Length: 188
Image (tube, rainbow, N blue to C red; front, side, top):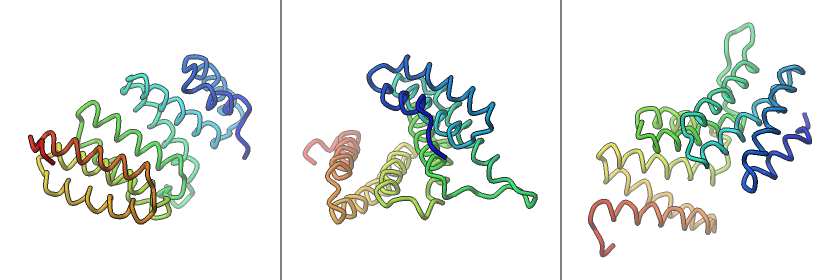
């Protein structure tokens, strides 16, 4: 199904004018519920969550990521019970972003749950899976497992280089720098 003009406006305004974007998103959600349009409803919750996350409103963001996931779970329920929806990119992204908010809130157990959900998505693009493994490294570090964290990051770095993914490479170097800093290894 096509995304609605309101959804496109919201995406466009998300960074520049988050509050205007939120108005559009609330309109999209209301319309989608009326029309039983799960795709646009799920997208709207995800974008809403991302805006709230960028504003540091992690509890609100998490609530909308949950709603996003619930929309697609509802969509994939059949008379045989619910299907694990591991092909829907919005569900992958909602789980990944939820993990980021949980890390910010220092709820590491919850963050790890979301990351494990992401790792079930074998069809996700490699660059997305690598970003998830970077988050997993952050989680391992917070769990007091710096060695696991380090070897994860080294592995991610190798793969980012093979993909010529400069952004991913930079992100990984930043994560490594962070790790060495917290270990008081200033030289590294």
